[in-house]
Amino acid sequence: MPDTEYAARLATRDDAAVIVDFNLAMARETESLELSQATLAAGVRHLFDNPQFGFYVVAEARGPGGGAGECAGSLLITYEWSDWRDGLFWWVQSVYVRAEHRRRGVYTVLDEFVKRLAAEDPRVRGFRLYVERENVAAQHTYERLGMSETHYKMYEAALERAAAEKS
Image (cartoon, rainbow, N blue to C red; front, top):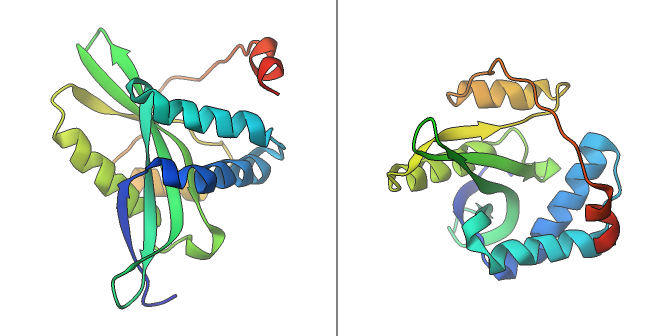
């Protein structure tokens, strides 16, 4: 794939199946989790039905002829309101790049696309994401693209019924 270039775009409903596949693969790779495909598919469809919660971006591989090819990677943007800044932070989530496309600039293409969208929206104040502690390669990528580690730790309290009701 030395001649492969990538182009990012907003995802559409037609991309839902590949986004589900990417999320299933990411859960396996990063946390050794087997997610419910039905629950995940419902969650992806729900976002397309409720864009007030966020949006997906995909990167397509393009060959020398320039035509759109396979989906090489994707990410999800969700919104957090900041009363301190009277604006939005965009959370970068569910980042996945197919193994054969890794270390080829796919995430950079996704990042640049998201930054262009944010520049057009005066409500956006910045970006946030979380990353697995052991995923040093991703951490270096985020730092190279202008992000820095914060002093916050992240905590979570999951409601068991949330997953059980959907499975």
